[in-house]
Length: 324
Image (cartoon, rainbow, N blue to C red):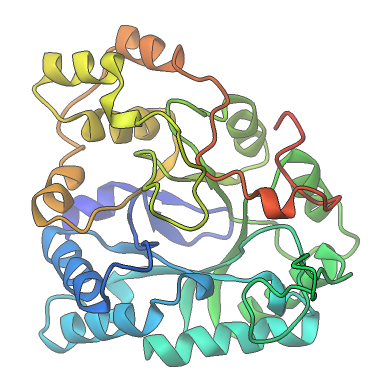
């Protein structure tokens, strides 16, 4: 789709990433068939950037949806920008490629466009996503993040991932990778929670200064049914400031929240399994927020996270204690 060619950003390794992506993380009660239909609908609407992860446990369904759209001639493989992520149980260097190959098998793909370190904490290898001891405490691993990064570099060189990056890294952790002796490729992006209540202004500025793209998840807030989401948080899309700006532009609050990030130079992930909203969330390229709108939305930031991941909080690599 020509629109998406214009609505893309060049990563620091020369690859092109569409600036609007379709997020696929879902509460466990969302049926695979619903997710599959949503991915197909998203591709029909025009999304060409699809984001998932090993830990979302949904790559079989996403793979089926993508393969159907390729088989029908709607898209070619090279039209799709697909992101997956290596989970902490695969952080030992000898397991990083295994984690990627597991995703590729499920997806029925020969490569991914972007492979990310999902969270800057290594976990004990094994089948359990959150391995715990008999007292229910998480079992961490001692793998150095820089050795994991070197293994991602090898995945890139092997052609299994076109680009590599990180997720949920703070400035200190990004600098650890950037200053790694023998670094071959710096992270192409850092995918983090980012929305008007947590606008990541300082982290965005740092990433821009290093030619690292900031990608936002939870761009529209998040579903409190999800296992990882903090409960009793304000509903972003009900914010009166967003609603007033949306009314002024005859748009939805979700469209305003997405447009806000695009105008800041952030790549956004929009997620919905509702057919109407999947379409609406794609319609963000034909209007502009004013400087006054942007300032009003900037004023909403209050360091409010939907994903606090408290079970990692006593680990020294927990990324959210730092200011940014």
